[in-house]
Amino acid sequence: MPNTKETNRTEPIILAVDTSAPHASFAIAVGQDIIASISTSAAVQHSRTFFSHISTLLKLAELEITEIDLFASATGPGSFTGLRVGLAAIKGLAYASGKPPMGINSIDAIALSAGINGALIVVIDAGRNEVYCGLREVSMDGMILALAEDRVGSPGVQIPPLIKILKGSKAIFIGEGALRYQQQLEDAAMNFGVNLITVSTVDSSLSAWQIKRDNQETAVAIARHSARLFKKAIITDINPYYIRRSDAEVNRSGK
Image (cartoon, rainbow, N blue to C red; front, side, top):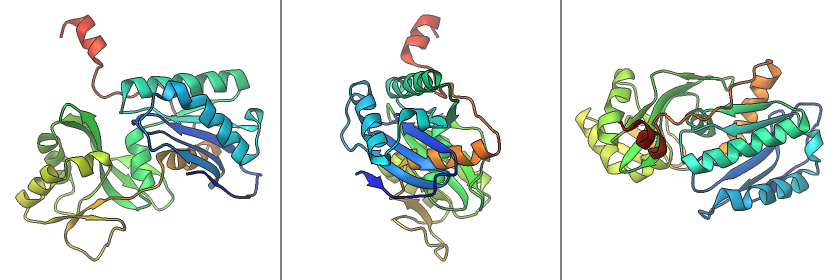
């Protein structure tokens, strides 16, 4: 759904996209204020709709592409094809505009989209009954820290080591993978002697571990985080972050 509002335009203007999942999201921020955002609910080929969504986004924001100060994109992990579309397009727009591109790790973006300070376990559906997962800590000022190496594999195998790092603290899960593989997460929770519940708003008074069901569009989180980094003169790498190799790479290497 589109969303626009008037805002102070003295801050850097950021255009952010996330095409790492079957659905996509797009946002324009002026500093921390989101002035336009679009999310798609249908699983469509991003290559067919990407630039029409960008055009709509700019119209909603009442901006020209030349007014964008920074172009940001999710770098993965996620859909290999979707990521290539988004990253190539953002690099092209940045190059044509003479403005810098920035990449934001998708696990970071999902953790930031939760709107929660503290530790979270991000779980992304990786297909083949596997997940990409990572443990993040979000600070009060919106900065983010990886507390462990990101992992890919069976949720029953990959999630427990991340839980152990929390040393008994409550685990908050977020991401579509957490919902799809909730039973495996519940089994892991039972092994640690706690229950797992699904909530929209995390309740810090509960002793149970929680899956946060609803979160803001990831492009919104990417736009805001990119604005914070840009103001600190930090430009993060925009190369894809796959964690595991694509089938084409595996076939070429023979391993």
